[in-house]
Image (cartoon, rainbow, N blue to C red; front, top):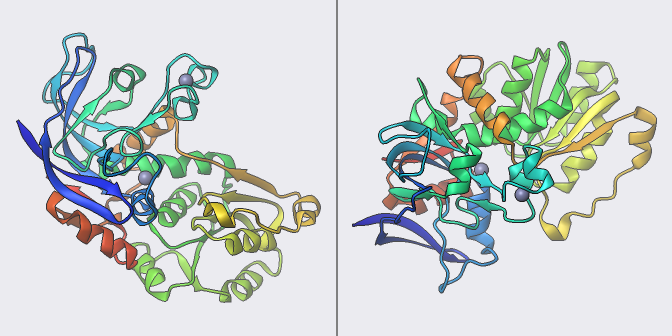
Length: 348
Ligand SMILES: [Zn+2]
Ligand SMILES: [Zn+2]
């Protein structure tokens, strides 16, 4: 049996091909994908190429997914044919200190992630390796749509950062970067009782999109953020700033706009050649700023985000603005590159 898949062969080379449906072992599951969202990571891998991905060893991208269990190997416990699930992308060896501590996503011994170094969800079917099945990457769904369930991945990355920057009721929270990630930070901050959520971006068009999805957020374009923060806080600065963009300047700005005892989250990574940033560390010292960084999510955070959505604590449905068939993956990519829409779903 064959299936359609989008396959990355290298820099700016993604092709829709017909490949065999993956075979599964006794410990493995075959997932029929129903929604796979396109992420900034997919776009970076496409624009820059990715280590290990070549004409000789292509990769099916896609790490934000949900679907239906098509087949479960005979040793698999807890998952049966027809079960509706979301699947977290990262798995580890299961026995190193990170894995034993519940952080399989930080494993250095045998880290695998769908769509990053093993085949992912831009295909009709995905093989779920035994480690992912055993470690609990698959979460049964009750009420969520497939698209929402796939959002559990980016949402839980954001949740990981959110737990560290610790929004308190009444805080003013500034998000630099008006993408879907920035919006999710804003939504969690609002949920935690932030008195104001401000979204800053260099693009008016992006800010208008934010306004459309979340009219309660304040928006501010480019450098105007300085006077807005000055005005809103009487010069005190903001309690929490999140940089949800790959910009060194945003990191510097975050330090400058932080209030006393402020928290700053460097959420977006920087391009490798721009990652050395001159920051006045006296700002950290004299303002007692807590600077945090996070990457990915552990499975507890992933599951919690599914619960937050299922119980209606947070509604991220409006973030999915565009839906495509697998044949149209490149359309999704080019829309994202042009800065159009929020989250783009490949759906079946
Ligand atoms: Zn992602
Ligand atoms: Zn490990």
